Length: 521
Image 1 (tube, helix red, strand yellow):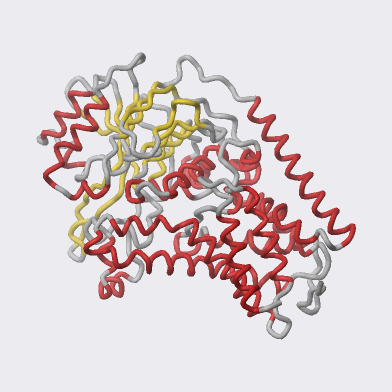
Image 2 (cartoon, rainbow, N blue to C red):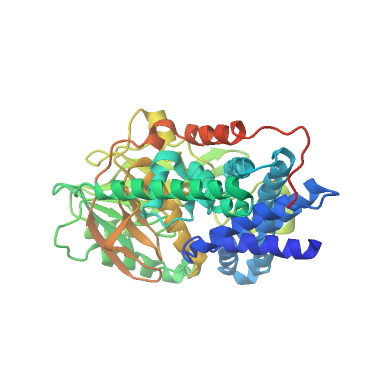
């Protein structure tokens, strides 16, 4: 095969696979994995590992460029100072993450044996490197292949068994199997087995969804506030009072059933949490006026703590639960974000970054400090909850880890996020789909609040009921009752052990070849 044609096809395979994800949802694009497997098998004979690495890297770079192009929007919030970085950020991010696919392609080519059993090696190597992508340097598990299925659909329910990483293995194996169809009856059997596996998971998901319990009549009542505040306006001190007014006006709207819990998003008020909640601040009085005694406000933002001589002030990205009492506002729960966004909330190699101007990406002091390892919080009078602040909702098993650390299972997940950074792009829609997988994995409902959308009430199956979401750019509230939690899922009990089992199947079901050769077809 012509070298350049193969490279173009590899990039096209990655692009097709990316378009299978929401908001595009072009499921035939999953055949891009079949094309990639075929291209790896046809790697240049003279240098197969180098050729396989390059083809897989090109596929990965195209995949991540499509999946993450919206990152450029964050640099345009302050276009005068940071706009120049936008194209470089997308290129570097996509090509850097593509290295994981490149390494997976080389590992597959080095290890895979001839015959249809190599499909297992393909799924296993790429699933392992996707797991590594979610863990190396804090990880960025955005758009895992297993999250291509729309959250809440029957196939997405497999995440309750295998998690998103395990579902990635299944998706890769099934989607790549058509590459073997021309290899006689074994190849056709592999395709049929893959189709049967997907059909079985579809049936499982359909049955699981059919068994959804009703929402109890005494479930807590919620109000999610989406004030549609654009990110660029938050740095204008002249509009600060107007931002507070938008949130308080929506909070005081009458409701058929008064909400017990009001949720504002991450960074709702562009000020230090402790400062604007201070009894001396006018904002404290404004918030008191729109809450009634007994109501709880959950809100995300930053807080400042006294540090040491080297860093006099330390900043945390936090979530507060604030109770309106008869005498004022009382903080009854706090969570400090543990998993920070590299280059957004803290700067790896910050001295070097400062020299080239990237330090300016962190808009709060010298960046944030991570909080303690995650665990649920149990504010008095509220069902115990696991906060996930923005980026943390990308990580499978995060809530499970907190449950194990605390010895207490939360009743719900609260995801406050600031997707206003990404404008009216595909980013907020993808984030909604990805975050919804955390509800499926854990069997817990999720309440999601963002400044500009998409805010939603998500049930324990990853579904959003009609009228319980606010799209991008909408100003309003969602009033709802909290959906019930389910019994702990298989994934909640065993976590990534499910992925390990699938990887063992991969490498146990195909012999290690003495020489890295593949049948040439």
